[in-house]
Length: 343
Image (cartoon, rainbow, N blue to C red; front, top):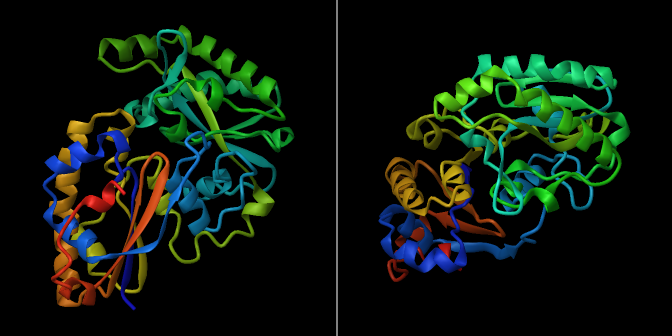
């Protein structure tokens, strides 16, 4: 069966904004798919204070990643390392992101890491500056790419962490790591912040209108031995998960839709705008998705190029699934509607 699962983070806007946004949204192809489709399962409500967002939990489950522990981010570090060409042999590894934390009225706020615009040369300068601080206390630090590094800390097994997307735009106090290694991490994070405070690189960035890289964020702790047993790459590979946390070149719609078998597509173009609460731009991006993806997808369903589509729609605290088949498109009595985005 030629089936396409499409995960669309932040397609479900906040309840208090949904009616107004959807009244303005011009997305006829998506409205047709949603109107003719049926709920694949009851919508799932998620704890708004969970340390990972609904689509991140879904990805972890879909890829068969080992559980990150109760109230912690998904155990993705070892899988992401392999996806970036590293082969960790042992130990407990965490994902690290260079980050920007700014001061609000009475608390600190993590900026969405997607807005940092950190290039390879800048990231390597910061990595070289911070690495001795990790080496001095016996922790291995590995460079992944411009926005993703890795830390080995075997003694921190059980440290509860939050994904950067879950914490973005919020008071970071309740999203900071807790558990084994908590105090050691805070000390290390503070030392890195002090080291980077005097970096000429940050002065250069600020002169260019860019945010200073003034902190690091940790999450995704995973034991290599447990991760080695995970079948996360067997069916869908790792690309979808990696793209959930960073930009990647997207294949053309015709190439993806025209494939065969059971496939997964992640359309994460709404994430950065939703995290920044740029809802006007969110509307524009949704309409772009309708033209570039949902319209050709609808035509492919009608022509039989695709047999079935499962739309997996998430928000900050909800996840809903809509199943659409070629036969469902013939149910003309079901009117096109975006109302399922506010359900």
